[in-house]
Image 1: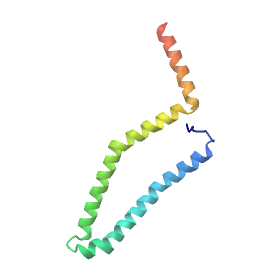
Image 2: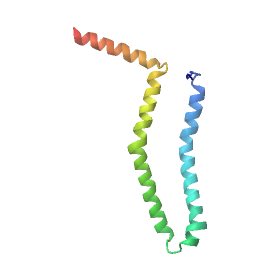
Image 3: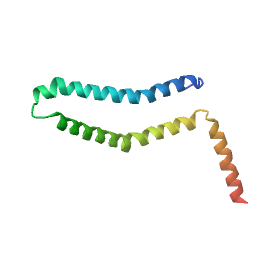
Image 4: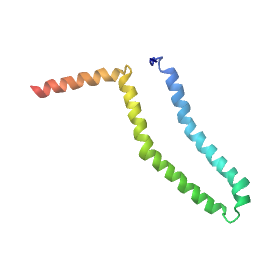
Length: 109
């Protein structure tokens, strides 16, 4: 079976920084691609759709996708992260378990 190995914080920090920057870069690329799509295809083949209608439709679609991601994908992603963090040599895990034991001992007194 394949096991995970802790290699330090450098790789994770680099990947995390790139992923956080990618959010903004993807937004810029999405807007660019949608503008290109309008000017090369939508405007040419559907002249009755002006840019304002196109923009309103896109904004509504983007809002629906964001709501779906928030509603369904985010809880799953946090659940997976919590599972990974708890399972793989997290130093906070030992501290939390000690605190729970102290609380249990204190409550039983």
